[in-house]
Image (cartoon, rainbow, N blue to C red; front, side, top):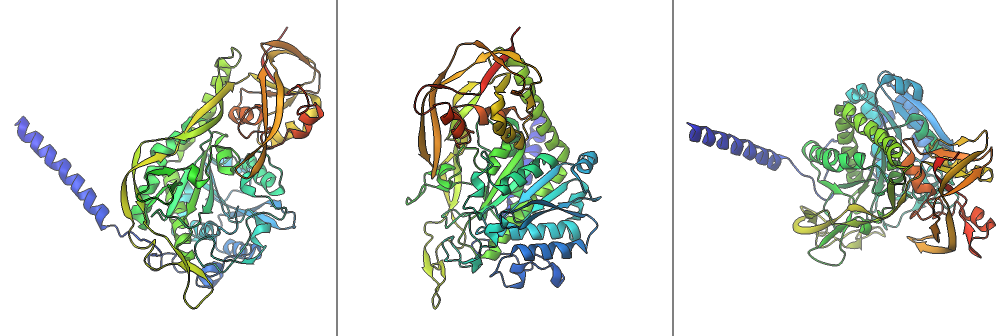
Length: 569
C-alpha cells in the first residue's frame, strides 16, 4: 500500500509538472517586432496617445502631455495632478497621483495605509517608449480594466521628467536602433546635464524637484524606464535594481529572489513576452560567455537615480527595452512590465511594506548596536561577481542597414528577428559585492561654514540638526594626503588619499551641524559623506571648493567632516 501510495503521488506530481510545461508551451510568445492585435484597447479620440494617433511614428511634446492629462481628468474621480518643478526653460513637469479614493496630499496617502509607487519616464527623452507606455498605464488605472489596482496602491506617474530635453526636437538618425519615432527630444536637459547622473550631486532644478517630491510622498517603489541601443539579446524588456553595495540588502534580495521572478512569469503568461536582467552579453563572440551589468553601463555607483534611491531602503527598478524593434513593440514591452509589476505590488502590498519597514528598523538598530564601539562597517565601493550560470536568449546577428528606398536606418531582414537561440552555460556577472569598507560613525559632525553641505544632505531626506550649544565629540579625523582628479565613465571625479586618526576628542561650537546616524537614511549619509566613497559628495566634486579652501591638493589638510563615536564629557 505504501508503494502504491508513493506511485500515485509520483504520478500526480508528474501530471502537474506536465500540465505546467504544456501551459507554458501554449502561451504565444511574441518575438522581434510582434505585438498582439488590439493590445491597447479601444479609447475615445481624446484619450489616444500621440503614437496611437500617428501610427507610432511620433512621440509627445510636453504640451500634448498636459492636454492628455486634462482629458483624463474628465473621465475619472481618482486623479490628482501635482507640479514637481518648473524647468530652467519655464516648463512644468507634472506627476499624476492615482488612487481610490482620490488623494491630494502626502498626508492623505500616508493616512490611507496604502503604499505609494512612483513610475517615471523620459529622464532621457530619446528613450520615449516608457513615457508613452505610462500614459496607457494611467489610462487603464483611471478609466480602464486595471482600476482595481488603485484599491491597494497610490500610483504616481511622471511620464516626462526631462521636460526641456523632451521639447528640444531633432530628426533622429536611427542611432538607437529603430527608425521610429521619426522626431525625438535630446538626452540632456537645457543646461547640458544628463539627469540620470544626478543621483548624488543634485545640482539641477529637475533633480531637486524630483527629490522634493520623493521626500514628501515616500514611495516604497520607484521605477525609471529607459531604452538600450541595438542589442544581441532576445528579450523584449530588461530590468535591474539597486546595486550599490552600501544599500540595505533586504529590498534588493526580495526583488531578486521574489518580485523579479514573479513579474517575469506574469509578463510571459499574460503578455507573451520574455524579459530578463538588465545586462549585455560579451560582444563579438558566439556563443556569448558572459552576461554583465558592466557591459550595460550599470555600475555599482549611486549616480543613477535608481541606484541612489535604493540607499533609502526602498525598492528601485530600472527597465530598458532593446532599441531595434519598432516603437509600438517597445511601448508594448514597457507597458506589459509596468502592469505586471503593479499587479504584483497590489497583491503583495503589505508584504512589501514589511520588507521596507524591516530595512529601516535594521539600519537604525545596527547603528545603535555597533557604531559607538566602532564595530559597524559599510561599503565604499564594489564590483560585480558571478551569480552562477544561466541560459540566455540571444541572436547571432543584429545588423543595421538603411531601409530600401529611404534614408531611415533600420534592421537588416533576417537578423534579430523571430525566436532567438537558447545559449546555455553563460556566466551571470550581476552580483554586486563590496570591495572596500569603512567604519560607520554614531554621528557625523560638520562645522558651521558647511551649511551648503548640510542643505544637500537634507535635500536627500537625511535628518540634519544644528547644535544649539558646543559639543565635545570623541571620534576619527581624516587627514588628506593627496587630492587629485580621476576620469571615470566619462566624468571628472575627485579622489582623496589619506588616513583616519586614532580616536581623538574635538569640540564643535554652537551652529555646527550633526547627523545622528540612528535614522533610516544612515546608509545614504555614510555613502555621501565618507571621504573615500566611490562616488559620494567628494567623488562628484560637491566638496571641491571646501577642500581647496583648506589647502587640499597643495598640502596635507584635514577633511572637515568628523566621524563621531560618542559625546565626550
